[in-house]
Length: 156
Ligand SMILES: [Zn+2]
Image 1 (cartoon, rainbow, N blue to C red):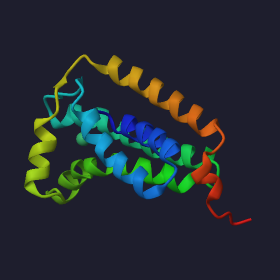
Image 2 (cartoon, rainbow, N blue to C red):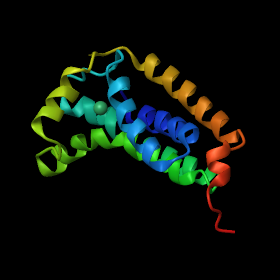
Image 3 (spheres, rainbow, N blue to C red):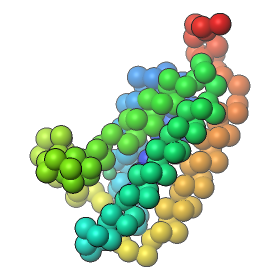
């Protein structure tokens, strides 16, 4: 699944979880769940992969910064933790490209590779997922914080 969708789903998780540790753990778990859903991929060449992955990576960074800026201060740590957890498993892609190896154990890489039902011609699935996750994350961030967030210490 595109990194942008991992960012947006991680933001939704962070907006709902409100505690950074649980948001991070749920974000990591969400990565593998989403990668197991049929999605766009099967690029055929490294060139074609990069034509999608580079813009996707830049959009992901922009989305993370924008969502972090939009999140209320008391909820920002959980939202950031959710997004970071959700994108972390895919750090193997730039690591392989730049350093020639994955930071994860081989068993993790093998599992990550095997669960992917990828096919070309599924860009619409990614766009629908981005719209749904983005709208849900923004809606969740607009809700008043729950009891756990209200008890959190405030800086001001
Ligand atoms: Zn992945």
